[in-house]
Amino acid sequence: MSTLSLQSFQEQVSELLLRHRSLLDVLSKNGQSNSSVNRSVTKAVTECGCIELHATKQTFEPSFNLEQAKEVVGKHVQGELCENCKEAISSELGRSLFYMSALCNLLDINMDEVVERESKKCSTLGLFNLS
Image (cartoon, rainbow, N blue to C red; front, side):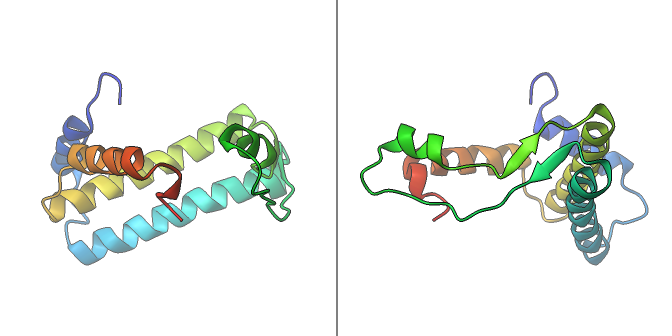
């Protein structure tokens, strides 16, 4: 994050979280906030229509190099989020980040370290990271 570190955000969340300090409460709120992100994206497609979903089978040719493969693989998204949908999705992502931070706090996990470890893993494994 730019001027605000994940650590300072995590400390802020720790100070603000009063009602849901139980691990079970935070787990359920984290799941609920993630579902709200999904719902906001879905509403951008089905209610607003500012983006469209055109999902098809992703085809990969063994002869393609990395750059060619990136050009062929699609996002399945057409259009751009309108300001209202972008704001709604950003808000839900923020809430999701809040509860992720709360979960880290309850389990004594430093978010900066999580991001750093994941970044190193991505650098080491490259394309094979999530396969």
